[in-house]
Length: 72
Image 1: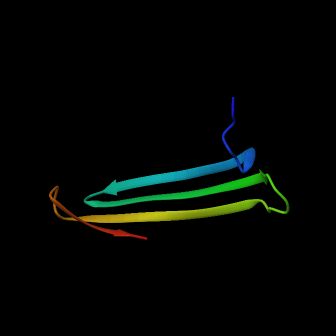
Image 2 (image 1 turned 30 degrees about the vertical axis):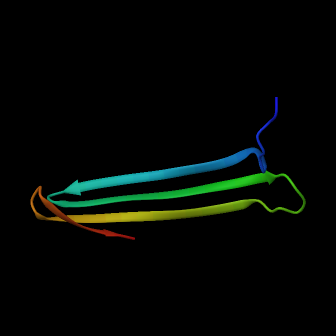
Image 3 (image 1 turned 135 degrees about the vertical axis):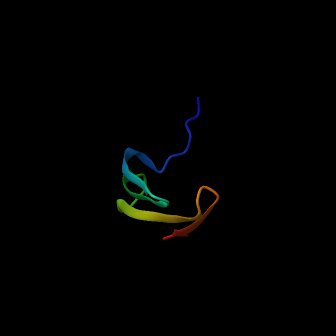
């Protein structure tokens, strides 16, 4: 049986941290994530580490009908 092509051999580490809060028509949701990729196949390919986040904030201007949102 033929194996699928892969650049690395399962040394992947990644995590996410998510949080959300709502209070009196205001809401805020966010996530921070990171991952570390290593043991690539090939010559002189360095390990990779990356991370990032997003944040979403909102406010109901008409209760339970219309919410304004902002993203970062």
